[in-house]
Each structure stands twice: as structure tokens, then as C-alpha cells.
Image (cartoon, rainbow, N blue to C red; front, side, top):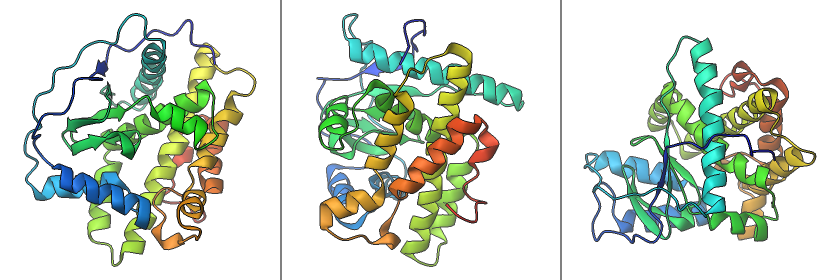
Length: 287
């Protein structure tokens, strides 16, 4: 992946090693534990649990946390900053072409746990996006897990993870996330609510592909094997594969992110077309 000429985003916050306040506004550690249990054993998206709990608790303001800029010699942090900067330029252009304004998200590097407007973020949750503060959160140790546990190494696989979370930010700005969450609250069953989550996640995969296509067209960032890295990552974190590994069985009604094949298919649709209009998973008859 060629990022030498990419300008880093100024929106990266470094909270690594700062510890966790005793109490943060919004959601407490108990909710996080419930979220993690739901994620690992029932296939429920932990972000959904935390978001719902945060709303139920009145969205108490998050405790102010001091952040800093990453150290000058931190190559991985600067890699993340360049990827984020690339997404900013792509989505700024895409929104501008549609007569809309793109509000840049912040990306927070943390270790262990950190307060967010959606509750307490935990490293065990993996990278996530909080729509309430418009920030992407990631513990960079996840990249080792991506390589060792999910067997999806490579810098473009790492970039795909960020681009997917930024895709959720795009959905948030466009009002898609709110519509989906409202529909989930009125869903007739948990399976129906999960099915909506799958479409939301697959759209974020497609938007990640759109970013890659547009960034490559403008800056030629892709090298041989890069796309395969992203496809390997998308396949490795499909619901069917994760459930099979964790429980030995597959429960489609508990899917929240889509199967490996679906995640690959929608990322490919985004990168092959480079067109946001091709990412409407909610009108697709087949995923």
C-alpha cells in the first residue's frame, strides 16, 4: 500500500496509557460486560447494546478525557493517520459532489478502556464507531489479533478496518444509522432487528470499498495483493465463520454483520464500482 505521499489527518487523538477514569458519563462497566457477553455468545453487536443503554440512561455527558498527538516516531499511529486522512479527502469530495458537507470524524487510539459518548469502550470489543461523539475508537493491538487470530495480515487489511468504521460515520451523517436504529426498535423480533444490522454493516463494507477505489484513482495507493488482503479480512470476520469458531454451530438469525461471502461481495461491489449508489443494501433483494 502506497501512503508515502498521503497527508496525515489532524484528527487523531492518542489516549494510550492514560488509564480509565473511575466513572465516565453514559454507560458503566456492567453494561460493557453484558455487551461483550452478548457479542461472543449470542452474536449481538456490542455497539448496539451500549448505544441502547446510553439512550436509556439519558445520554449523560462523557467525562472529559485529555488526549495528545501520537509520538513522532510511532509508525503505526502515523499509518492510521494517513489512512484517516485519505478517507477525509475521498468523502469530502463525494459529499461535495452531492451538495452535502462532510464533517470529519476523529479517531481515538486507546489501550484497555476509554470513556466515549456511547459508554465505556473496551479493547476486547475491537474497533468501533460511536455516533454520539462521531469518533472511531481503536486499540492498535487489534491489528495483531487480525494477523494472528483471523489470519488476515497486511497494511491494506488494516486500512480496511478503519475505512469500515469511517463508513459508519458516513451512514451517520446521511441519517441512515438513525433510520436503522429506529426500525430496529420497532422490529417484530430480534431476528428482524439483526437482519437490519447486517444490512447496515454490509453497506459500511461497500463504502470502505468505494473509498479504496476513489483513493486509488486519485493517488494510486494500491499495490499488488492489497485487494486480496482486504478480502481476506472481510472473509475472516464474517458472522458464520466467527460463530463456527466460537460455538461450533451457525445461527443465521443471530447474524449482525453478514456472512464471510456477503462481506466480501459488498466490499468488492464498492471497490469495483467506486460508486456510493451501488451500496444500497437496504433495497437489495439478495445480499
